[in-house]
Length: 246
Ligand code: NAD
Image (cartoon, rainbow, N blue to C red; front, side, top):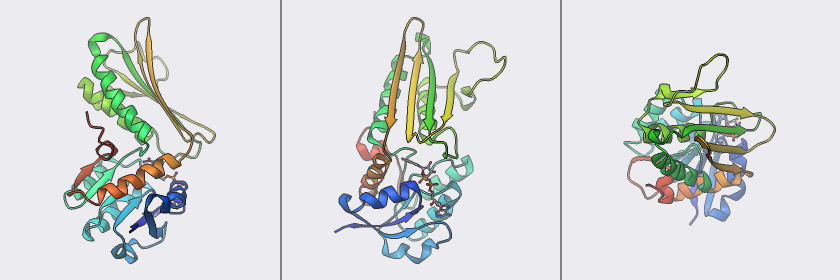
């Protein structure tokens, strides 16, 4: 039997992509909603809620999901720290898979970045920088995926948020050992490119993932939708879904 989904952001690029492949992944978008629609109307008939809308829409939707005991898959990015904290606290009552990027390849990139970060630690003198490029219509920066990559490096190296340097301009001085650079490029119709660079003296390692079709995110989100139905309340990542925890 197909999994019944309430999809928020149904008229957007991701929403359309999810709807185009839902049936072949054993899912049915029984309640597609977009701005102006009331999620309360269809939520009772759905097995779970999938959110690919706008950052302001996620928290109210998560509150409605929690009060109806419906699991959630969140793909929307760009939330403030306060919004993130409130959504995370709702995961005490429902299972939530929350991922800035649902592609299998990017989740492997997270894993490889963590491994590389452990080997190329601060004592090895390799400087980490994260570079991302997206289409000209993307509203938030850096991308949710870049934020996650920065977090992986920060945590592996035991650094702080203030060590992440977003772009450089003017007389910023020499690069400090404890910096992690973050750079966002916007233009054209690029679906999503991410490079993690470890620049050493005399050598440089680059791990790159390039997305060429949104369908990879849609397929991952639907895989997460089927997986989350069987889970206990809690906050899960796509790495949990893929069994990629190190
Ligand atoms: P989009 O702008 O094409 O679509 C967003 C849709 O949300 C629009 O149809 C808009 O009308 C709708 N919307 C706005 N406010 C709403 C509300 N209050 N309730 C319901 N719907 C509302 O954007 P997109 O490219 O489809 O991306 C959507 C989100 O998903 C963005 O935050 C983007 O960064 C993120 N995204 C995540 C992944 C991932 O793998 N996690 C991949 C791609 C995009």
